[in-house]
Length: 483
Image (cartoon, rainbow, N blue to C red; front, side, top):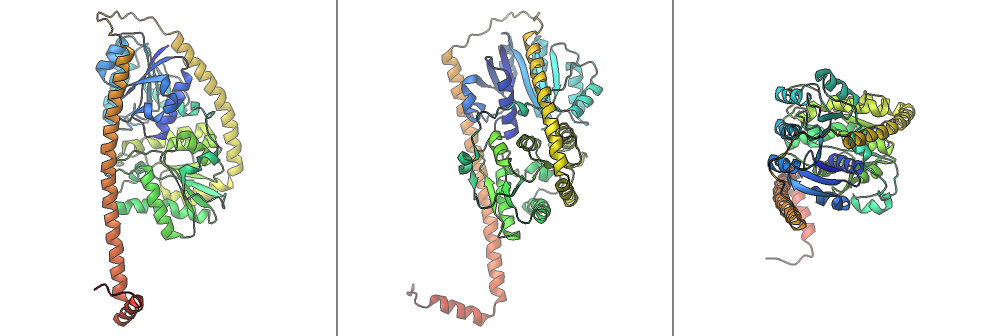
């Protein structure tokens, strides 16, 4: 089969990585081209799968040219299709689908659907849903219900989130992963897993300042530490991407470790390196008493590791500026219900942790039993969905579109040059991003140095002058005169 995969974004998100791996595993022995709408390369992220696909930068012109040949299109819409990652990202994918359906190419869309998308998105989906060449695959039953209710004429069938198909067969054991853990402490096997992210912080609707970010971290750390007084903390990174005034998960983990030292200097904090993969995260989650996160795919990793997560998403209200978190409540509750038959562990506010953590602890046995039952049922559903997708791709309708422009053959040399150009663009973009991040970290360090200096000056001002003089004299005894 000839398949064009349009990724939701460039690499960097462990959730997107899991979906990419999952879809590639469903398309063995296929001729696959990945069209990437951003510059972060999937070839470099999925090194073990790099021989299985070719990667090219996305453009409407390139898509049109490729579709002159007999390609089907698979769009990993995730939370992009419904505008949760911004209107422009949604329009890019919807326009791609419009191009493909206008050329009678079979399209499969894997996505979730929130309850309040923008009007422009709804209008475009209304037109697309009339096409017989497009199949919509919502990744949770709540999204399926909402989409079918709004677009009743569409070909819509539930399809499990692609991350459930991400293979674990190549997963290494924990012992060979320990180089990815900063501050590993083997003496204490009891731990809780925490993840902090910029999107979760912004869901609070506060002003985006470093002080408020620290308050957000403390609002989760404090009830977690109180509920688990003897446990070490394992801090997870689910997304390595960061921009100006938008911190990566790893940056949040480092800040959380600093705050933890202030709150409880004796508590061990392990920080996972940003190089961890989705499957690494699953292995590092095994044995955790709980995961607290604002990210859905890290919650899915927890379910696959046999751990019951608690998700903090923010409210579904227009006041939340971050679109991703506005739709997160709907989707996370749908996913939790699918995996454990429970929506109560999806919270809108960190303050709810004071009640929900004790509830989760008291219900661990029944929740794990529900997870086991749901997992067995979901595995059957996943196998059936995979068979259904294969059948659809194999029996796609004949195209009536006749090309008047002969397709340009791409020799191996041309393909290699295109890949090399793309990788150069990726590396250049990454270098610029890392420079900006280093500048931001430098500014952060400058602020911390100023705070420490102020504290030292305040402390010196409180000490009696004679005591200060005596301390200086005692320190200088026996020291050579430096002039």
